Image (cartoon, rainbow, N blue to C red):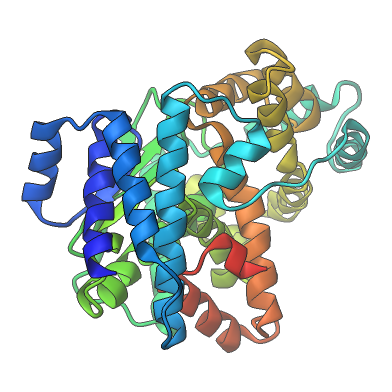
Length: 403
């Protein structure tokens, strides 16, 4: 499998010459990247080579579970690469067909009636009367982190997420990341893993950032989210086992559902129960100059809003299937996901760029949560939860292996 793994890495790098978003991270031999840049392998040749490597994998090997997981991982990743080549070459798949081909999963559908019922429950939580979205926007403005407080709030959140993570799992002493602030991006934040246990985390400041996003981003992008995920893959699989395929991260692949799902569920792992509310109220609200007495009410609103996350999938499904256009998709997000106009437009930019990738956040989180809970890692068993969570982070397990 090692020869196939090396070929896989080189094919991902070759794909990166055609698809600028495809290679999310690479810290393998520098000459492999240079070779890909110099060769500019045609898409048809990449597809043929991937098919050859997929056939060469053969049946699953005997041995320990990790070897079998590795085999399945390589087969799935090569299959996703082939599907991505097909999409770039003009093949059209439905939203669900695409997500299955790339991410090894299909998100459930939700009707307008279901989403309207959830959104309507927001009314009892918001002050004022009249249009629900307008009331929500007005209310949320009171929880925006002032720009001059942003760095201090994020630094505190990151430090606490790091401390809470290090209590439960061992990380290399040299692991670290930098935080930068950017604009004009389709995403709200991004982790760029550089290898050597180091990341660059960028936070998009195009739109106001509310206080709830501090923990969301610190945990999701950092601890115990993307940064920790990549660190553990590098340490446990690349360095300890020599599995070179994990020195590259193909964004449009099943690996992303595990990455996004663990990053989102990791927020709850790090701050179980009411611990998040207590920390935000007692530490982050004062740092941001916000009234701590309003923290509990805002937390209830955020919890209700999270129940509408699948509305984003529905907007993307209808938009990418050609049932509605971008304007209607943004309106759908405003109506059913309580997304203000500017944020809805930013979301459509994200869907244009990343397409069915949107399922990896909510479906990924739900699948990871069910998997960890099913292994006994429930909220009342925090040690077991951390143990199973850490094991998943450092494994080649696929989304289909979570069911």
